[in-house]
Image (tube, rainbow, N blue to C red; front, side):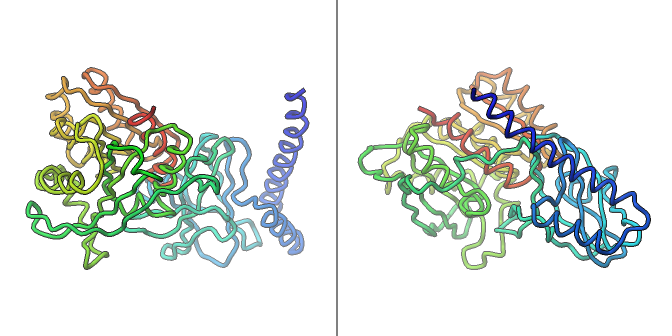
Amino acid sequence: MKSLHLLIIFLPLISYSQSKWDEANTIIHTKNLQTDQVNNWWIDLNKSNSIPLIQNDSVLFLYRGNATTVEWMGDFNGWGYVKDFANKGRKIINTDVWYLKCKFPTDARLDYKILIDGNNWIIDPANKFQQWSGVGGGSPNSELRMPLWNEDVATVTQANVPKGELIGDALIISKSLGYQVTYSVYLSHNYKQFGPMAVVYVTDGYEYLHPQLGNMTTTLDNLIHSQKIQPVIAVFVDNREPVNRANNRRMNELAMNSKYLDFFANELIPAIQAQYPVKAEAKSRAIIGTSMGGLTATYFAFTRPDLFGLAGIQSPAFYTRPQIYNLCEGNADVQLKISMTTGLINDTSTDSRKMSEILKASSCVYQYREVNEGHSWGNWRRLIDDILIDLLGK
């Protein structure tokens, strides 16, 4: 009986989507369109939130406005670096409507913008979905959600879930680095009742905390409340200069930097252990990061397995420091627990697969996931819960 109800609901959806797709193709190939016909079609698409128009694995990007050229830039063409992706829009004859037809995996989620006349980057004005991206907070991109992509409920704030406490912008003066570093500390709800807890250190801490980027505290709240992970303390280390937040030092700090590792080992970890109820053994201490931070998580864990027994690695930028492969191969007998993820669309899948083979031959316990997404916080945020469960699951 349940399957019958689903069938009754599903069939009209197919018909509705198909009819809009057919109508769009008719509009595109009609030479003598009436202005009212175009206006009514455009109003209908906007009212039904049907831009971009999606049918199974096919996408019709649409833009209406005065322009000489219109291009779609995004994860799908490496934001312009992948030259063999046909991203230039075509104009429907005798209208101001531009279109681009593409095909993507049915479970893909991709960031994009529209480029007008080669110099004006805009979000899609007809698409309500957005994903923020970029170092230091960045700016919004439009978001393409294919039919089989689903939002992860672990990333969504739930009214009935108790919130942990966040102590923001603590300052530490580092002798190893020769400058000040800020960090924020997340404490599980009612953390004092649990005794010593596992601790998670997070690079690019500002981005992982940002509600429109990583939103990691919400994921922690939800996973702890649902008892999918043990209560934890999380330390979000900010790579931005404290007195000039526009100066992000990540490209130096996260590039297999031995001084940055010394800062963690000799200064930050002792400071956290002295102030908070965290377990001291490596098997209860995780390091997590994305992109350059994913490289750093790998470097930290394989260089100091006595400190970090757990590593969460997201879209790792191994290509920037290929010596990381030799480091991991040379320490194949270490007992680490690793969770690694990557996108398949102009992300780091080639390098991640190479590392996956190294991990497979090692003594590490590891999980590896690939998703049809790009190098984006939309990708990383949705996989934080998987990583935390892999590393700290009950």
